[in-house]
Image 1 (cartoon, rainbow, N blue to C red):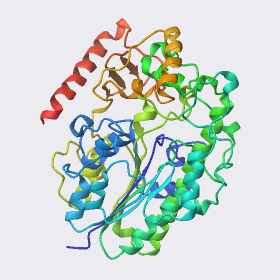
Image 2 (cartoon, rainbow, N blue to C red):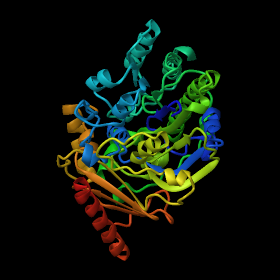
Image 3 (spheres, one colour):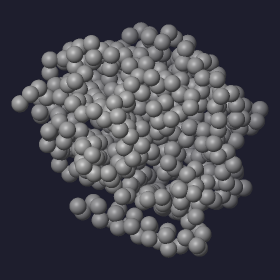
Image 4 (cartoon, rainbow, N blue to C red):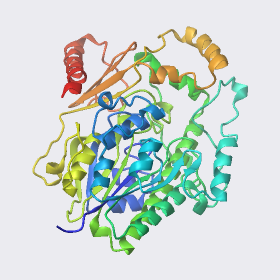
Length: 487
């Protein structure tokens, strides 16, 4: 038997699926990720099983849906613990050195201590574990204390969560987070070049806080950015989405403000691209390119300006549940755009089939290796996503009532009060063909014809003409979520 192949999973955070040049974006510059895609496999229809960080990542590393993992929030109790099976254990038991360079948001400290050989970890404010330099500390301090948000108190703002920072991060590129993650990833590879290794190469960006150093801050002209679907009528969509649009204070943003945030977001992506290029270049220099399987993906998406929003919400719009996915498999020439629907719980089973490794127990994902081998053209007829904690959500109310309620909750609970709406209450989605159906406990249903309405502006759930279509999808979704745990 030959030497085991190495594995690198590159994961970004809150990365809208089409915000890459190789996915057709007209502005974003991603030459190194594009180079990874060239001659390999690009998946146009990959979906996450939850548009929330920890649930999505836990499902990725266990191959199980959220209602099986019970990872329903970003709380530490929802991370993978020692009693839980994951693909990491299988890699370790098969002789792999296992390393983390970047954001975790999937494993408990106890799990990392037992199964990882290397831990250089970062959060959105900076480095948290590993070799921490004085500059790392300064960056973390700046990110925690910087007056991040635009002062719009004159407009009676009630506080902004998603940031508008109208200046670059004031540190040289080589000291900033994405560059430091690249250095830590390269060091792990260099130290383990003679062993089979797995590297979880994970970036906190382009998620909030939407700050980036030069030259990336000035790389994109906000005036070149086009916004989409700004005239959405939130009255026709779940109330929880309206709540978040107000809590984030988006009505106080001008279009120029949103474009500035997106210019920074794109700069964050280009900085990640530079870091990816650094790692892949070193892999090639070390003669490991033909022995290393590389996956580039994200945990979930981002509004990316659609509906005038950035960030994410407790919903299932395509820009939130669709994710980038690129795979480079040693010995296989791709140069292929794969149109089959893929779920992110399918990725690790596919990798393990490529690496000839046994699956972890309880896997619900299914390998799409036959798609790669061109023996099949389709993979999943339906894709599912879910989120939310079991508690009943706060009540739906009129906009007039909400304005009073918002002031009271803000005064009592601070700017994060609205998370009760975005996280409480179970919700689930089924996408089948051109149709998408979404159910929210205690809130409005959604039904979209994605062929006629790709931006999901027109909710057909209460349209009598589509009653049969809605009931068919709803029953199908209920069958799935009620029977899947028993399989």
